[in-house]
Amino acid sequence: MPRRRELKDLAAGIALKFISRNNDLRGYWALGILFKDLSEIGATCLSLNLTARKSTPDLKNANKVAIEFGDYLNHQLKQRGFDKSQVLEVILSIAFDVTPTKNHVNLIKVARGEPFTCNIKISDDHGKTYCYTAKGWCEKHNPKQELRRIKALTNL
Image (cartoon, rainbow, N blue to C red):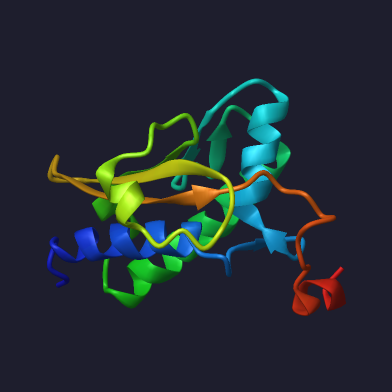
């Protein structure tokens, strides 16, 4: 039987995978695409329910990411020996309207853009919640300034 504290590690793994530059959507950084989609509707926050595989607000690209990360969540739970019924809800929230904090300033800023905060919360069947927060910088998607991953081009 898996230890429940592994859910804290799982939360960190999902959050760091989500904000990673290797998180692609059609060959571009998914986070930049989601930032652009949110700004187009005048929103600054996004919530992905990975267990229900839906996003709030309901955006096409965000729903694709929610489905992909829902699959990743299920795979990780299975690898760690958890039953799906042990995890009730996994919510990943991203906010682009944040003021840079000391933690943001201490991050090596290798990209242009605005600061963001990514929070993940895993709720289990024992009523316990496991959280993780990641911070970084993100620029809105602009295909004229970004390189597209070759791997993604072959899968179109």
